[in-house]
Image (cartoon, rainbow, N blue to C red; front, top):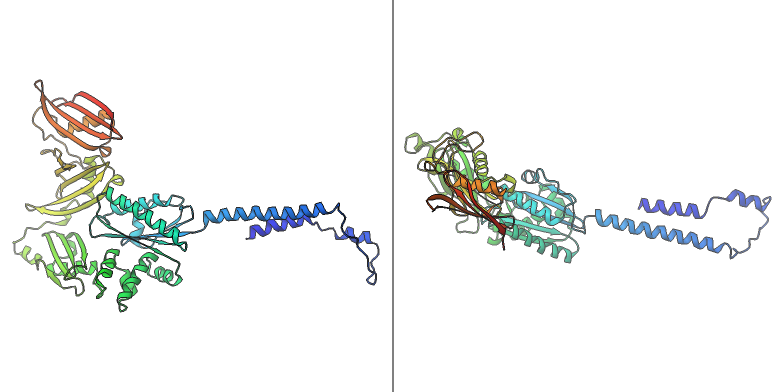
Length: 488
């Protein structure tokens, strides 16, 4: 309003200048007892007065419309929050442009790292956040839930945003083959709820979900519930909130203690809440130096219901083989090896999932992801990083059987028969000829065949709306045939 007031003042100042001295001089000597009559304004003066009024009206109107436009662009119309366990809040104007993106907890800071979502369309920002959640493994389980909340005093706008954002997230999860459930709700402004959410460092949407649980069981404390995941809160609502669950961290600690395993011997752990089953429990998977073990932990008492006890003691007695976790390449290295082999950048990999398992006494990392419409599955040996299994869209890809692992994660040597470059090298030759990256390929097919006494690899793939067909000489890698056409 200060800007508008200033414009009005300037208009008045120009329309009615300060000219008191000239007027008094024209009146002659002043006498307080003398009444000086003033004639009514002449017609000649009226246009000037009308012009002054019109000027003030124009300033008022122009300033008002300018102020209204500024407010439309900069005023917060809706607050959209996305919650899994990371809590992210987006402030949005009437044009559905993001004014600010806030990470409300430490996990959310990791999700938003490197992203500046200000001045982006809301749907673009939401897709970027969902993509980051997928890459960080938050939405890879069927039992996982993501909560979309729209806070807006305009009920119709809130409902429309809720519907469109739910459809966007559903589509993104379907494209990534992720099975997480999508929950949604609309809210109106509630100062008390907003203050409670701020104190607990969660979104207003998650705070509303906590209140739903408390409505079922008032004995449950707000802060304790706020520490649970959306998945746990949703399951509590569906079961009537009979009590306060111990939480994923406590369940994992109980299983680890029961197994007699120290933190140093745990390679990975995964905890899945099943509060809507009977009995309510947490499923805990521990990948350790002694092997992979599964436990069921009671959701409300923390007691271990099933799983092997004293694993470390059994290993000490020689009944279980051991692996020094320091000798493992680790999950991140296994992932980088698989991505390098597929020719896919990490930021382009959707539905990333990495877990370890033991096979014939050796630890393997299973790596799965999607990129360019292609599904990839790898098994990478934890001890040296060698790829022991590679599949693309369910079809086995050749894996080099000899050679060594380089520091970059690629392999040297040849696993094909003498005088045969192998299917993988043939695919690479075809992709290089087409100028196509492996991560942008869909429906890759590769068959080894004999043609006129010559062994060839017949290769077909799709990329960027084009369909490619190649024949590659199996002995030399020479391109014998190359065709491409638009994919109908």
